[in-house]
Amino acid sequence: MTRFDLQLKHSGSSVRVTDVPQELLMKFGVGLYCLQSTASTPRHPTVPYRAVVKDAQYIESLGYDGLWLSEHHFFYDGYCPALLPVASAALAATTTLRVGTGMMLLPLQDAGRVARLSADIAERSGGRLDVGVGLGYRDVEFDGKGVPRSERVARNKLGLAELERVAVPAGATLWSGSATPKGIARAGARGHGVLLSGANPLSLVRELAAAHREGWEAAGRPGGVRPRVAALRNVWLTDDKAEQAAALDWQRASYVLYAGLGWSVAQQESTEAMDFRADVDKAVAQAVATTISGPAPAVIEGLHEVAEAGVDDVVFRVIIEGAPQQVVNRMLGRLADEVLPEFENVEAA
Image (cartoon, rainbow, N blue to C red):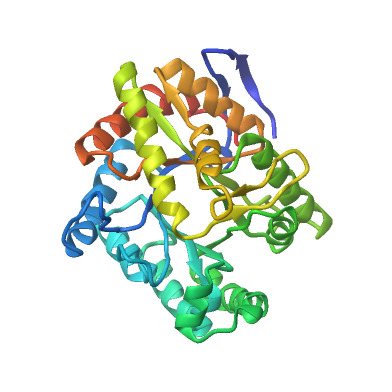
């Protein structure tokens, strides 16, 4: 591919590359929509399901590429247990927005049913469905579903094969979720994209992005086009110091809530373990420390660092505990106006 008119303007500005094919450009989404009603932000269970459709339309109107949903089971706050019906509703209300599941817990599902529903939704939406799947890690979910946790890898493998056979030909795009280089490399080897956690420090993002590329290359580059690396990132654009502090508090509250799900990141080459079960305070502080916040130039520079770590797509993790909806919407509008234009012609990593 020939590049024209390359201009490098870093440290407070942007990298621009013109004449880059659309499919190679960086993309931006919003998430994760979990559709919860928590103790600190209670609401009728129907409210978030109505709101996500309106939010999808709003996000699309601002020019974002995608909206991402998240699944869990048997959590007190009604955390969304069924993503495909929600995805279909959001897709039906929009025309260009992609909607992704980040992540659907495939070992807990009937793989054939998931594949058929995904294929149907993908066809009806014009191929705008991103099917992200993960292994799951909570014992209560496997126990509640009557699925031995020891079977999760085998069930996931069979489920992926069914999705590749049925859903991909219908236009669905497959993504995997993992926090280990081996798991990420396996996704690359299958030609699947990956969505990385927002709690991952940049050092781990860099390791995982490299593992994904290496897995794809070692497998003979299936599909011919490198699958994309997407990363949730904690981002908040504001010129107001008080709002910046509040946003960090909202991020902190969201991770305290998430700590109840028992999530952890194992030690990697240059990244220490982040265990929300063993040391909640330390893990929460590490997760909040990943936040890119401040005025537009600081956010732009932070996002360039993410791109340089090997990330193609960024999902702004701004659906967080305690953040008022009108403040989130205003901030998303500012990101669309002041940050996204700086990446309009930037090639993905």
